[in-house]
Image (tube, rainbow, N blue to C red; front, side):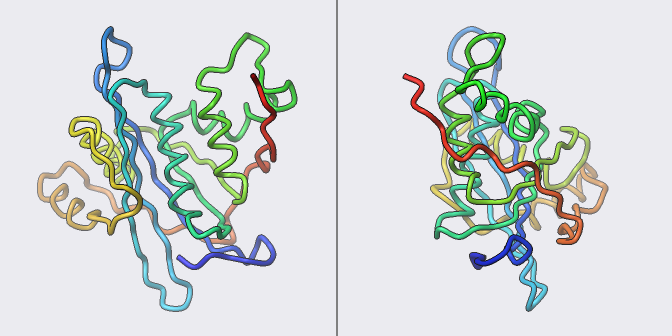
Length: 216
């Protein structure tokens, strides 16, 4: 990916499909979790589509926590060289999508508090706001476990990370094509992958709050 400069329309476009897993979510005891995603970039000069994978894990966590971490890690990977991008971020977590497109604005106005009490996972929300801040982001929800190829792939990566307690340590060349071929053989995925988004249809959410005050 080549980092962008100049006006927002000139920013390079990337697509991220992320998912999370928490084995035994809500049960007593330690529930290991994973978060993962596949990042896509279409080179406008060569029209070549390139994909990268990333994944992380925690030994004791929740689904909501890992949903946030799936996004934090994605923006760390995308912005690792300090560039700015337009990012279409797709997740099956309404907690994440609604939080970043709606809730964070009210929380920030109230000094990072919500009317009903403390904000769950406050430190992670603020970290995500900081990581996503330089970029223009469209947050998109997709129904989970509904056969969406990129979402199903991200889910498999997240489940594996949770089980193995592994991390990709940044971006790795994606194994999506081999995975998709295997899933088609097993008839577990029967639809085509989502096409790379058209830049003219990109509709970013409101810019996230630019600062996070000290809440201590």
